[in-house]
Image (tube, rainbow, N blue to C red; front, top):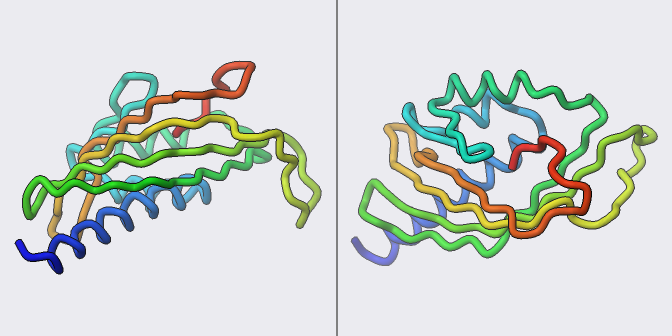
Length: 152
């Protein structure tokens, strides 16, 4: 594999992971689920949601209020290529969250990050591009008051 092929894989994997976060924040859950391999797993609370259908069902059944605003910031993305069809990626994740009324057009109040963690990802090349085979996030810092049920 030459340098151009490596860069293309790294770029495509980064785009898949960025799309995942963008879909999560925009509540485009169907698009988010489509980013997973058919047997892909997203670990939530140590338990896997396995396959796009299970991931979509779990996201659509979330009890969050319509006033919940989240913003996930992904940084320090490193993609390690295993072979032409498999890669692993690590990202840092900072989550901002507000649950409450916000005046139309106004920004949500900011009290600092809700959570900071590291996400470990395994990706696999599918017939239509790179898909998430496994996603696990470790919460290294969390706002005082504990978890509020948000996915990360």
